[in-house]
Amino acid sequence: MSEQDISVKEKLLNSGKEEFLLHGFKNASLRRICSKAGVTTGALYFFFNNKEDLFCSIVDKPLALYRELIQTSIQKETDDLNTSVENEENIMRFLMTYRDECILILEKSAGTKYESFFTEYKAMLEKVNTDFFERYARRKTNPDLIKIIVGMRLQGYLEIIHGKYSIEEAIKLTKYMACYADAGFSELIRKLNEGN
Image (cartoon, rainbow, N blue to C red; front, top):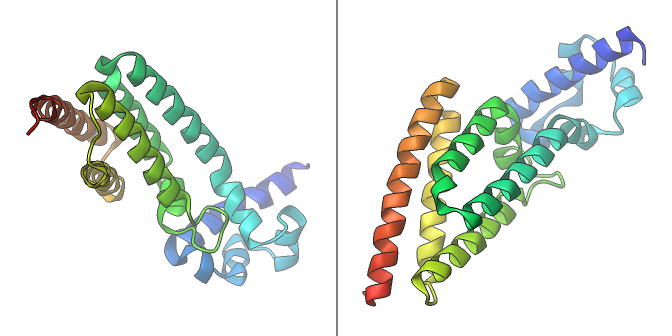
């Protein structure tokens, strides 16, 4: 691929990201994307099969990296609960580095193969949290409680991602959230083990 081709492709990716962030995948216009990139729609089809291919080209790599990070974090925390704050920091650093791509996947992907990602991700976190609670509480945990806890954590992430925070500020807030979650986890396990 020539330098000119790479430049055109980059312009399309940047223009596409802006358009998808503003309008979501469904309402994004290939005409507007191409116009903003200064190319014809024919040029877009030289690099991408269709609108979804462009969207996926923007989010695929960050999403693959995020999935890897989550699996590593889960394994580390399963092996050692004391890694939870560090894991949360790493996750938030990633989310802030790829803030736009995260928003695209979580909130702007309706109509793409990723439209159910948030629901699937939430279900995975609910399972992981259920396993943690049952491991330490040594009893079945109320699934509604787990849904609420996971929902609170995800809402916290989204609040930070949408905020006007620097990475440093986001990490600091995440540390506080993780400390709060750890203390709550310990107290909740104590209550569950008491049978309350």
